[in-house]
Amino acid sequence: MAISVLEKKPALSRRQFIKFSGLSALGLGLYASEIARHEIDIVHRTIVINRLPEAFKGFRIVQVSDFHFKEFTEAFFIKLVIHEVNALKPDLVALTGDFVSFGPIERHRSVAWAYESAALLTRIQCPQRYAVLGNHDCIVNEPAAIDALTTHGIPVLNNRSIPLEHNGKRIWLAGLSDALNGNPRPDFNKAIPKTAHADGEPVILLAHEPDVAPEAAKYNVDLMLSGHTHGGQVRIPFLPPLMLPPLGQNFVDGHFQVGPTQLYVNRGIGTVGLPLRLNCPPEITVITLA
Image (tube, rainbow, N blue to C red):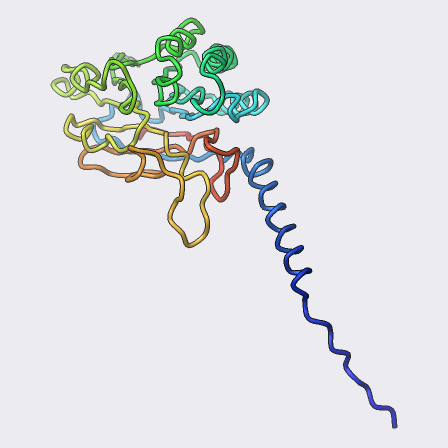
């Protein structure tokens, strides 16, 4: 009578395990640097503002942040982002800082890249497009960053505001100087229009660093839009975000209520430190006012 014998498979050797682990790490690194870093997440949020005029119900703001052009975000990727923005047909585009990076490269190269990135942003077809600067822009060269944007038709709201009018009604778009490295320093009294609250008109504030939201709440800002955190950039399951900058520790990404102020933190387009993203894709935010 034949007896079947089950062959025992050899256990994974230490050398095979090391090889397998190395290949897995290499594969994960390639995924984080080449695929996940370029997977755009278009996030739609409806935000209710109690005193919003009826004329602005359905007004759509597209927010894009933290480009970090050339270190490490490529021109082709910014063009792809702009293509997606234009397809959304927004009423206003808000650009919340860090157009270039301050890193291991020479600072003068980032100054030149500020003008190059601003030239790319002229492809945004929405006529209402406004910006504030981020900490990297200010470290590289704040006057040059402002000049690059304004000479390419993108006003920079540096401690100032502008009215947005529609059908005889008005809301305000304000912008704050960068809280970490801006010169002049952030000035809420200059940024927030004094007549807005007296007239019952909502204020939307662009401010690069989200952790200034408690201060914005003291001025009864209705909605604040920020970037800066990159959402943590590399998010390992079951662990808190590992890469968070100063003034980006308390509000990492998404929608928050801070006193009377609603805050939205965009994860940004680019990366800093290393050209890697994991479980934290680049974000274009579409905010519909209601």
